Image (cartoon, rainbow, N blue to C red; front, side, top):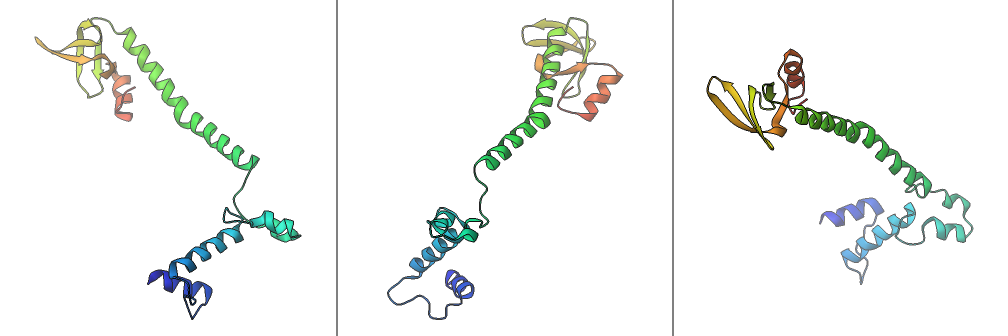
Length: 162
């Protein structure tokens, strides 16, 4: 019912669907007509109008094609690279350098906010002493930074790590 009302309003048809056609056939014809007028894949389009000699029809608005579309995609990729990918790579590199520079006795803060002193390092696991005779095991990658006033401020701004 909704499709019928749409076609009646948009095309001004009062006797719809025509005799011998179903509503769906008429709807497909409407879609084909719309694509053809916009220069889309519905057939003909601007190329058919140019072949027929219509210069104005060749300038119909439609999708940008060729070099303009390719240039837009390349510019979007460059924008994403400099706005998202590159800064994230810099942060990851700084974090890797921090992880490799950890040594026994360093005061650190984890990304979850636990302060402690490194008691032992065993591969990817460090043992933090968070109070006298209270030790916990933490994975190295969850160390947010060396514990000082500057690191505490940075972790408050970016909770994922420094």
